[in-house]
Amino acid sequence: MNFDLTDEQLQIQRLVRDFADQEVRPVAEELDREHRFPYEIVEKLAGLGLMGIPYPEEFGGGGADNLSYAIAIEELARVDSSVAITVAAHTSLGTWPIYTFGSDAQKEQWLPDLCSGRKLASFGLTEPEAGSDAGNTRTQASLEGGEWVINGAKQFITNAGTDISGCVTITARTDKDEISNIIVPNGTPGYDIEPPYRKMGWNASDTRPLAFSDCRVPEENLLGPRGMGFKQFLQTLDGGRIGVAAMGVGLAQGALDEALAYAKERVAFGKPIAKFQAIQAKLADMATEIEAARLLTYKAALLKDAGKNFSLTAAQAKLKTGRLAVRASEEAVQIHGGYGYIEEYPVCRFYRDAKILTIGEGTDEVQQMVIARALGA
Image (tube, rainbow, N blue to C red):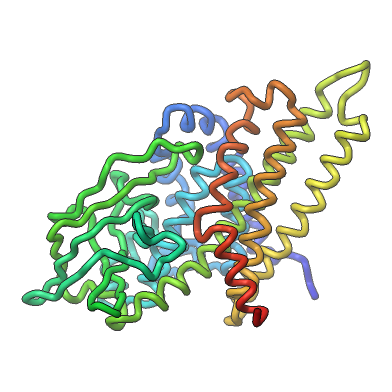
């Protein structure tokens, strides 16, 4: 068993780490405070080829593996989760279904812009009555005269409302007992992008509800065979959980970095608080849990790269890292004391950003259900 990263993976790690430190860190607090989407950062990420890391070069992607992608998301989340989720949702949820299930024509139409980062993609699954119970989709799509006529609503959708958003792939009922996936381009009449949510965290990412009112798209916008939408989105979520798990690892690592640096500088009772056993115990536990979570996340990515079943490991990684991110950011705030409650310190933002990692891409309870089923329970 080899735990060493390849030269290419190390190169991507260094590239993204340097980018996050030099380009993202100086503006992360400002973007969060102003709830401003990081257009300039996304453009620079696209210029570096980082918006399509695991996709073939023929489509404008990076031609790298899924472990490289997970490493990149981890390094971004170490500094800012809003930037990380923008890349992760675009790559894992938005682009992946088109790459995996799309026809040659759909791939030719969408992938060059998406893999290169010129356009962002989003995935519309969650609805007001269909969150964890994703099979309870209410959105309807009726085939009329060679067009799908879509009516319904989606919520908590990432990347759909930016100036560079290209399309959203939505789940819809194409018959009473049939769910299909359909690509809806931005700008289609009847596709209304609602105002963004006011959120606890991820304030620089784009998250909105979507509405469809007699929205018409061509019949050929159906993604894959009709009626296969349920199976398609389950596979999509499996892969997406690797990206979200990487975010949890990165956020926890960022919280540890900030806590350790502060503990070395903060003097109390005549010495740095890092010299006190109580603080050392917190730091030691955080470091140990992060390393375990990182290995679990990397294992999920390696299994996917090997073409093996990774559903169980991805669910375990997502469950582990989400909870870890919450605990690690809370401990980082505690180590900072009163300063940890002040927005000028990154750990305050980390703490707010962490909680969604136990909810999005399947709640902890859903992950437990997936894991229990895999165990035969």
